[in-house]
Length: 432
Image (cartoon, rainbow, N blue to C red; front, top):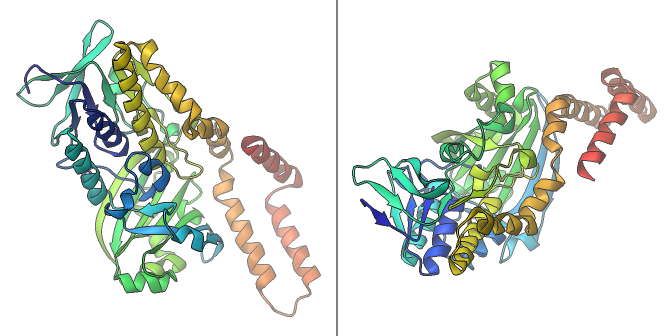
């Protein structure tokens, strides 16, 4: 590879990087896709939800051949207390029909398939390779330095999609050290269960899938959430909390997921399962305010490296895929102009602004500040909802007027009317 020159270099074979490499290769570019893992998906971790629309804009009808696990036609939210949960959900037969809305995936399988599609289109996949640095000519990025003896790689544009802790973006001066307030540490286990048990326990027909988001007791009052996603013959189970809160709490991620799995309602869903995979990774949580400059001369940043995650809606794969696609389209337009300057590549940010990606992140730009300052949304409110439900649903001969009085006393014994009104106002202002 010494002194080799390509049309483009893509760093990271996750959804963003592979989408960019695939589109560039389809356009006839000589593109190299560099992955530090033994194979694409070996080091990539996410909860496990892939949204159809963003992926289909890269490969139409991909689900007909891709190794997806189940299509998601049910979404549940659990507000968890120590021995109970108040559940809200939506299930629809419309989501159980093509073209579907979302799928569960296992990254080791899916990322390898996706990278293979990029190779079939003409991209050169180079796994087991660490990109150690960017190469510059003045302030212009002209290539990368890889951890191999063969030498450096050169290209007029480099697309960084190396994940949230993007060392190369830092070296390029695009952002400083990431604050512990801007990332969550998530731990995930893949727990294998027979298909029949999964479908019986989650009331699913063949192919159907459920996604459960969990708020409350499972994070021990820390800002974060948990999840259970159904795969074909396994469950993806995890919990993530803000890194800042986790460090100060002195709790370990392992303790959090073990305690969540031991909750009586969750334990029953997992009973008899075998944990075969365990992983931990950082998730961007800073939202709009954490997005770094997205390009400079010869360089574009996409996916988690650009902090493009909507933590409120648990959306990341669709933003990664869209940003990777738009990065590739921007590079193609820049080549047509013969101009890879920062001003020319600035059309990438404009394209993101016109898409749902930056529009959604801008809309929810105050969410992170709200929840980091009002942590009782993750502890006190789930507890109160469960206590109120217990009181009102328990039939014990007590008049309902008395039960309502008890609920009122319970609520205002924990929070004043002013505090509740303040929280409602903050929620309204944040989500309006």
